[in-house]
Image 1 (tube, helix red, strand yellow):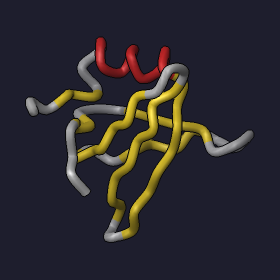
Image 2 (tube, one colour; image 1 turned 180 degrees about the horizontal axis):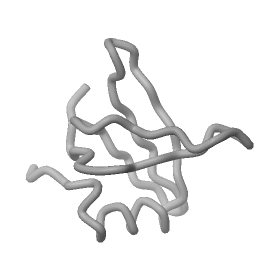
Image 3 (cartoon, one colour; image 1 turned 120 degrees about the vertical axis):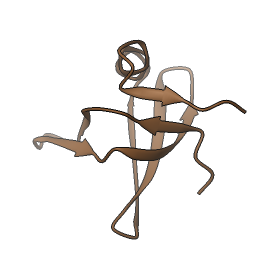
Image 4 (cartoon, helix red, strand yellow; image 1 turned 180 degrees about the vertical axis):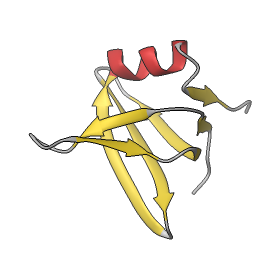
Length: 71
């Protein structure tokens, strides 16, 4: 996985109607679309992926919880 961002704090997503789940701090791959951002990371050797609304992603970036890495 080629990380282009890093989780630096509490970043959470909701799987369906379930509880909020935290994405662990560390490398993150982000693919931004028109209305959502797809986040991919490894968790104990298991790849994980989720999509969150673009507004939520932008808020995490503005708050410094997701730090974009230079290209």
